[in-house]
Amino acid sequence: MNLDNRSLHLNFEITILVVDRAFASAVAAMLTRDFAKCRPVTAADYWKRGRLFRAAVRGARLLEPIL
Image (cartoon, rainbow, N blue to C red; front, side):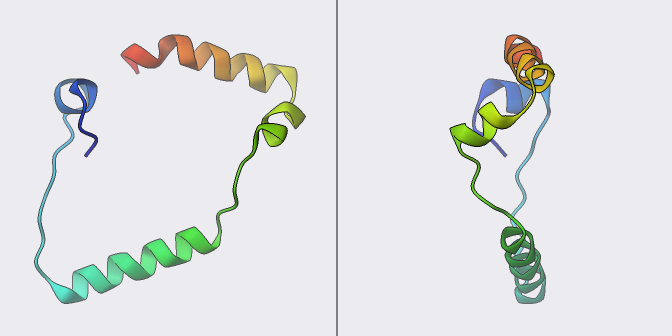
């Protein structure tokens, strides 16, 4: 859960505490697999994208308060 008003009141995010070693191990393994597929994204990567993509990103930022 993100600790901001939008997450709490608009997105209805919640937090849960699970005390189970098997579950924690499964989540840790899942995250390790996911992170292994990730790569850093730089500003240069952004500028390599097309104009339509960059315009969509700017448009999404305008809508950010209500998304």
